[in-house]
Length: 173
Image 1: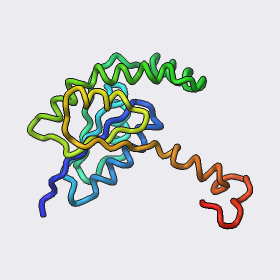
Image 2 (image 1 turned 45 degrees about the vertical axis):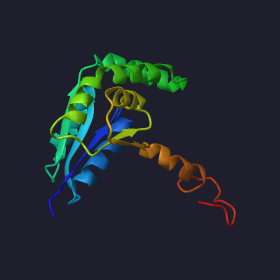
Image 3 (image 1 turned 180 degrees about the vertical axis):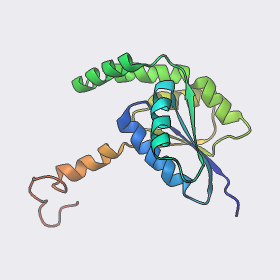
């Protein structure tokens, strides 16, 4: 059987969201049913993906990085990190507004081009991509993924990887 699926992973340019996207992309690339995996992010994030792929090349040859310009730079990243420490979400919302506006043309080209993905995967913090996909009227399925750190949090809090006492007998783990 010929590999037929093309999957597009859309990620904000923060390392904690890009690393899980890269891991998912690499895992998908190893599957025989996957023809191509596109990693979509801004120019700043695309440079990170390119650096990682240069250090550890994709053995499947199925990964591609696609970028769009939104003006994001190191100064923006520093501000985002500072605001993340406040945990008020204010700067995060501004980042997603930029994603929604600046990724639209790229997503439209992907969604209606000759090599359209079968689905788009956006992580939980990348709501701007959802808005852009809706705006362009992409009919593909959008799947929400969660950063691995968020998946690990309940395990740590329940004693799986900390010094906290283990859950009581019969408690869900």
